Length: 409
Image 1: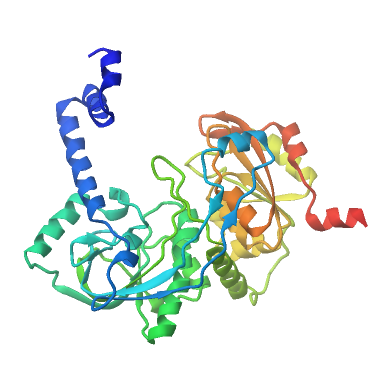
Image 2: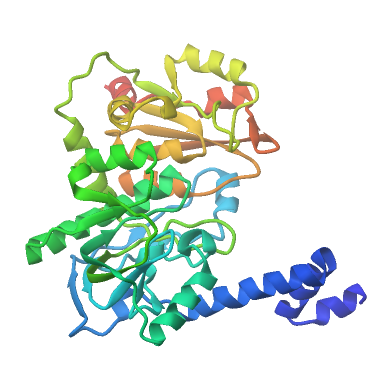
């Protein structure tokens, strides 16, 4: 088939032909089977909010929120890179719902209403295998449920909070704020659901739950055994997606404010063994996923000139990270999940370093929503790593707010 003929094909057949050309017939059949099962699961997916109220559902709504408007970045490269992303957000009223006649299924404990329809709030509004386990497994469970087969295990009242996403950012900004809606449910009903978290939880999952007031007596680790749930409690899930085909970003100031206030208030009583630097550099030099600074020695020399202290956050507990960031006046670092902790600072200046191959607006949006000063530097990229021009870095430096205010007196 020539190129002109291929271009004339509809989109899906063209993609199938390209996949066949690269992977052969067996590869195409395998991918086609996966595609069909994913599509079938997506068609059966629904938000808990859209299920009819009555015998199998009760729902409580939070207050409405004003829209969030993001101003255009002053930097031309960021303006161009962010042009395709939304700059206005209209968060729906958050809700918490109690659902009956549900199953928790698979390695990620996703909820199926009636054992058949995927409840999107339990999968982070994603339907890829990473988030629902096996789409084929879900369809098999749905077929068994249609024949009246139910799991033997029964749970009374649970609140699933499982995040298969490997990123700390998504756990912090998407999943933890759901706890505020769980607390609304507890206030309305007097019930105390068990929070279901991932098996063998990552340290930051346990530590952030502890900081939010949820110790080991409040959660259980999911063991992957399918269960019927008498009362399945689910809450609004606001995705923060900016990759591939997933471009669903819902910015809520109320979510961020709850998270920020809860964590800061929980940590205020802790004694500080040593003062931390006002100017903080968040290092990714030990991260395997890229965005390290290749000329880190030269960058460190510039940061030293301005009194920066470098921290590898993975080497500290969450409470220690909170202490490091709480009073930071300037926070600098490559684009990455560690910058999410900037939300716990009081009034910082955030300077984000981007490799030219990865320019995404997550932290610009957060800084705008919280009223933080924000600056950025787009660097040359070596694969996924950064080559920082130290002169540009000096020019991007902004003195802390209090110092700038003092210079005007």
